[in-house]
Amino acid sequence: MTTLPPLIELRNITYSYPGRTTPILEEVNFSICDERIGLIGPNGCGKTTLFQIIMGLLTPDRGEVLLEGMVMAGEKDFRILRRKLGFLFQNSDDQLFSPTVLEDVAFGPLNLGSTAEEAREISGRTLEGLGLKGFEDRITHRLSGGEKKLVALATILSMQPHLLLLDEPSNNLDPETRERLIAILRGLNQAHIIISHDLDFLASTCSHLYTIDKRRLIPCKEKQIHSHDHIHPYGDHPHQHGT
Ligand SMILES: Nc1ncnc2c1ncn2[C@@H]1O[C@H](COP(=O)(O)OP(=O)(O)O)[C@@H](O)[C@H]1O
Ligand SMILES: [Mg+2]
Image (cartoon, rainbow, N blue to C red):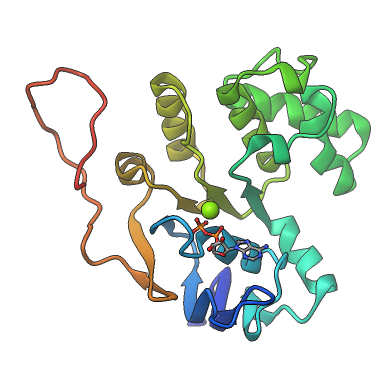
């Protein structure tokens, strides 16, 4: 029996921002196959930096990023990697750049070689899957924050990535949109890594929890994800667990 290599593997990654003497990440080892992982940690501990390294947007001082067992040796390799990974930015305005929703969502498929007709069909299907049917001609910059977040998600899902990297996706969402996003993520097939401070959101969407502690990425021991049914005196008010 042959075992498949991990979808993404990090080997001994150390990264320092230019001009900084101490690295922000040190000797990071990690792999993901089909897991759904939550990543927590204080502001500034290097979570977004880690995503940028995985995507090849930052080059580590030392160490390697591997895609399906292949070491990514340079920009040419990372271009292949980026076709398989979908990176949802923390700020949707950084992700959306076209005048209309359709143009934004069709951009990826067109870039990957789809015809205009195919790209329109994929985009329509993706938007419908996210409950955004009829949004095609909406003006992107006029959407609400929650709508922008879902459209940004559509722009990466339309490329059918194998792994989703979601940077604080539930930030600033109203409770209804947050619940909708949870339901959407639970319904997807892809592996994902979600950066969030929202532990309930992670409990609903992830099975493993990691954190960055003293510049190293480690499985989170203090907080464990578990699901439970419960009754409490505050009705259906939003509440946090484990904080
Ligand atoms: N381009 C940059 N140049 C120098 N320092 C940076 C840069 N980007 C981020 N940093 C610093 O690196 C640290 C980690 O940033 P980041 O990965 O964004 O943290 P997190 O996502 O965990 O909040 C922070 O202290 C941040 O200020
Ligand atoms: Mg961040």
